[in-house]
Image (tube, rainbow, N blue to C red; front, side, top):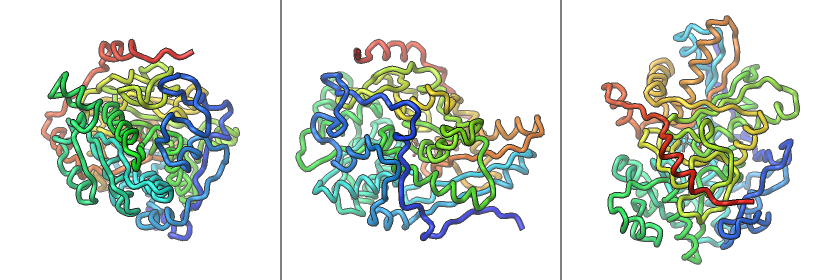
Length: 455
Ligand SMILES: *Cc1c(COP(=O)(O)O)cnc(C)c1O
């Protein structure tokens, strides 16, 4: 009998997150204050207290293992542990000697990995007496995850949703509203930042950077409100390590160890959550030749084309300045369907690991990603999120390379979510209407002219 699914019982769910910061061979460059541009003190990384204290501490923690609170574990168990699958049918279809596994995060109630951190952030906020959380969302995945987290812990949730998606993806908005959130298109008339942009351009399609600025402003002006972020920050990556910690146990059940791990990166949280628990074997020299491949869209090629420098996390310059690959905080990417991958920057931890040579990066065009996604769906049944189609593309290419070389490598795919709210995009692909966007060199150069001056 072929063993196709590797399941952990609820009792076997890991109860600690893994913090890579103390294990980095060189320390991570500290975040900088958006106004003074000085390194932020560890204890209060931001001028007004934007995040709950527990989150601020986690952002810079030097502890290797951080206990997942019981209350968070209880909510995690409503959908976790998630499944690890062996993709026998895809292997057969590709006629490859490679062994392909995928860890599927699409079975959470919100359909992606994002509730792993949303639930934790809502819990810590509630515990510290916060009444309301403000956040941004692009295509709506993060907004829906946080709406769910907030409703589980009795918090109000205000979501600034990138205007282009607000109109393109009405059902994600319905999902958020069903969970009780208040959703407005960004730029919105509810903030100073939004009003100014709307005055200049009433049709402004918005961007993730702009929506972050609005949510930050909301938290600045409301005493009972904290800001919550869905990716990029160290604490978000920390919460996502539950994915890789589970996968390590499951790969052991499968008697396998990955030679190649491949994931998509928007702000980097789902993929870091998968690979960080493995990279300690690479850092320690136990598995030096393991390849960790970050995949991004050609239309928003942060890691492959953006310089590694200092930039704001948001469009208006309210967020901390981070050392990261960036296309410039004012950059507005083309409307590719992988909404979760349209961010100008990248998690500093991933950029640092990239600089140190532990991870690599590739950019792909969207048409070939959907081709791969459809191939995957026809073999395995699951309809991947457009974001996940990016790394499925690269995984298939690696598996085909194994066929040419007659090598049986073990490939692990981080499958971040399902594409049930993205069938319009599949429709465009299937009817031949989907287009690719070239690397927007001029727009990137213009945006890079506006980087903050640091040092
Ligand atoms: C948000 C999202 C992403 C990209 O965000 P990361 O922080 O890079 O993980 C990828 N896949 C799905 C399904 C998402 O919802």
